[in-house]
Image (cartoon, rainbow, N blue to C red; front, side):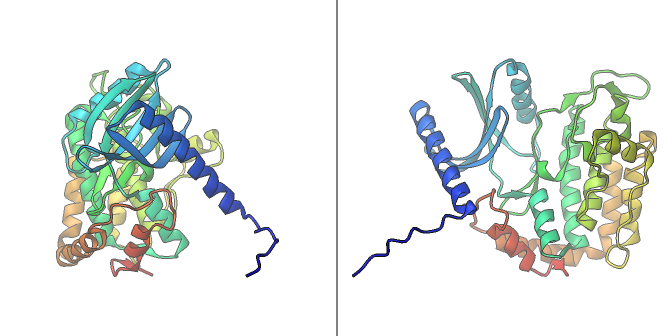
Length: 338
């Protein structure tokens, strides 16, 4: 049998995959030298001094998410995030398991989720499909439930966005990433605090002035509901100055009323009031959506059963793969409409 001397053409994708594998192998090798309890299975995110991994606990054989942050001068901030997460008890918030410090790194072990709303929205947009009102309402109820717990602890999340709303194998929303959450420190007649943090596209108008309260999370949720309905960011600009101007001065868009109930548009409208005094609190948002949901109970229950079937046993999904099996199967079901 002869062998060809021609070299296989290496595609850019192959190079990237090989680099990722090599990087992962190096991380695994380093990690196994330091710890024996957790085994790295995949790299989920690497940004600046933060790394997030999918890991296997070799004691209980369960899958977890491990966040590793280089301490430098950030130890107090990192510990605060772990403490915040450990205090929150809701089935719609990413569950905290443990945290520890080792070799100039701080580690947080959390519940592992297969995907997030950002990936779902992107996949729907690419496939020219929409998300049903029933599923949107289901997600909104779950986010509201998680926010109720957060706000009850006198905490503001401050960075709600699709990328921080994770989805587990049971299709439940899990609010995560409390890196910039904070206690409401300044209590005056408006119950406001001062400072500005967050992702620009979801930042409430009052955050630009640095004086705000819990209603910044309501604004962000309004932007998220709009995005779930339209698959478009509610406020977008290429520049920080541009996004500032748009958020403070430009009316938000409208959803397609041939697809969604006008009452859902009304919910978005009241959540995106420029004056935070005119926005509802999280309990009121929940009640608005519950009233809207009344006519959809049967279909919502059916959708929930479909989702549970889809996710049953799917523990080994690559969260970094845009065309993940999870999203593809979701999109094939009847809860999504063209």
